[in-house]
Amino acid sequence: MNREHKIFGNRKDAWRCTDIKGLNQILIDLKPKKSLGELFINKEVDVTNLVNYITKLKKEDNSITYFHAFSMAIGKVMYNRPLLNRFIANRHTYEHKDITLSFVMKVDFDDKSEEVMVIIPINKDDTIFSLNQKITTKVNNIRNHKETKKGANSAIEVIGKLPNLLRVPIVGLFKWCDKLGILPAFLVKDNIYYSSMIVSNLGNLHCDGIYHNITDFGTCPGLITMGEIKEREENGKKKYYCDFGITMDERIADGFYFIKSIHLIEYILNNPHLLEEEASLKVEMDSSNERGKK
Image 1 (tube, rainbow, N blue to C red):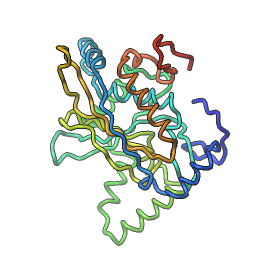
Image 2 (image 1 turned 180 degrees about the vertical axis):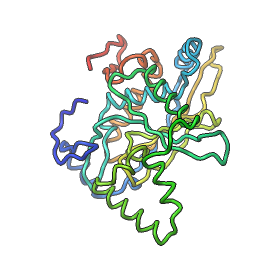
Image 3 (image 1 turned 90 degrees about the vertical axis):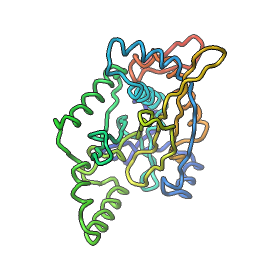
Image 4 (image 1 turned 45 degrees about the vertical axis):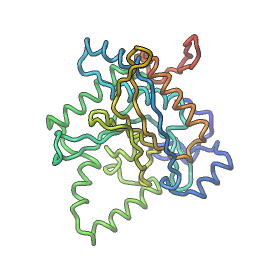
């Protein structure tokens, strides 16, 4: 990822940013916690072209889903809009060294089924097809018990069952380590709070996109939920819409940057052939649909 800003004081997982404007730094001082800087955005997007595109792809590959398309679109936007991949830690601004999406999945489709945190890296050369393979393989391996719990998934099971007298100070120690960027690697691995973006597909549950809080723990600056795709008839034609609920840490960028980012994801979903291009390829929102180099 190209970075025009100078960097120093790097972490293992991120670069320290020094191109921070005074107003942004003061905002961080006024709102030292993510929970104090939550920005809620709701957007209904016309996904008619995407529905037609996925319907066509499913004739060739039944494993392609809307979730894969939404995830790829988010990944492309984050490569094109790198400020979205930033986070605040100990009142300093950092940029993740990679782009990862995370989600929580149930092993089985019932109320008592355990939940597992999953992190999927989006590489520069990924397309909707390679991302589909990554997500499908990971999910199938977990549900078929081909993968054992590791990292944060395993640690949570142990720590969460400790009595209050032990668990509370241990969690407090972890929060202190998180603040300084020295959390042990086994607690970072497969931890959704250490990803670039948390995503949640609520469409399968017949639910609209909702607002979800973002935790003060970890380095993830935002969370996006995708609701159920709904059909409408407009002027005698079928149209499809999807509701997005977005929660972002407003301290990493200004409102103008966030709105332009939303317009970009809408543009990509309206031009779904862009999902077949490499994630890092620059997307230009113009009538000629010309795109620059990586």
